[in-house]
Image (cartoon, rainbow, N blue to C red; front, top):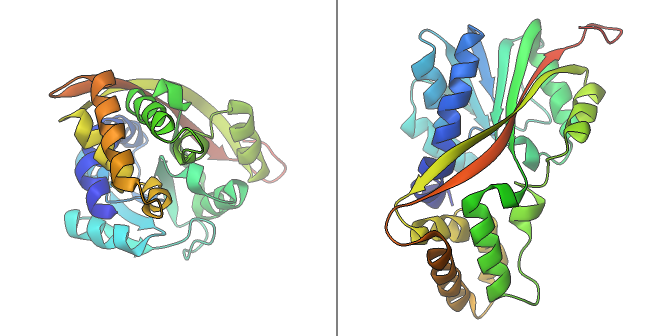
Amino acid sequence: MPDAYERHLVPVFFRPFAAEMAARAAALHPRRVLELAAGTGALTTAVLDATPGVHVLATDLNDAMVSRGSAQEPRAEWRQADAQKLPFDDGSFDLVLCQFGVMFFPDRPGAYAEARRVLVPDGRFLFSSWGPVASHGFGAAFQDALEAAIPDGAPTFLRDIPHGYTDLAVVAEDLAAAGFGLDAAEEVTLDGVAESAASAATGFLTGTPVSAALAARPDAEAVGAAVTRAMTATLGTGEVTAPMTATVYTARPLAQGGTA
């Protein structure tokens, strides 16, 4: 999965937003940065490029992602770590970053509490999550194609997980439960550019948990071919571009008693 993720998804979906978030991070002038759910390092590299002299400790729950990321971005320190139980001392970092990872945390308030614990009192937590799947041109085309190919129960992973954490009130409530105040929530729409609709389809089919859902199906190959055809019909042939919307959140630790 890390190879397909890096080859087909990272350049299209994650690098555009990584550059945008890295600029936000650089404006905070951090010295020690903890990155959660770093994947293969798209944001890691962007932050290191944008902030000379910064120390980035990049973490991911998945050992394979850590191995791939550490090989690609050796300027960072890499560790396998669970965001819900971080193996770091209190007040170790002045910035915690997470690009498109919080949606996967089973216990988001618990993970946020850990981020707060490892931050210095005046630190910041900067993270992003995708908008509804309809606001992501590639994701919407894929989910529509998948549901057309499997009308009797297509996997709903994309709609439920990556694009399932979109309610600002819920995010603010989760942060408050962990001792954070929400400073800002900004909707950002950027264009993704894929070498082809087929490449984007391959990324979704092999670089996400959808691959496991389809693996047990005897018609998996036919489903994949149908999805690729439908995405090409929707997005076009050759290099394809589509808008993608996310929300970027900035939170600060609240002092004991609940004030910033």
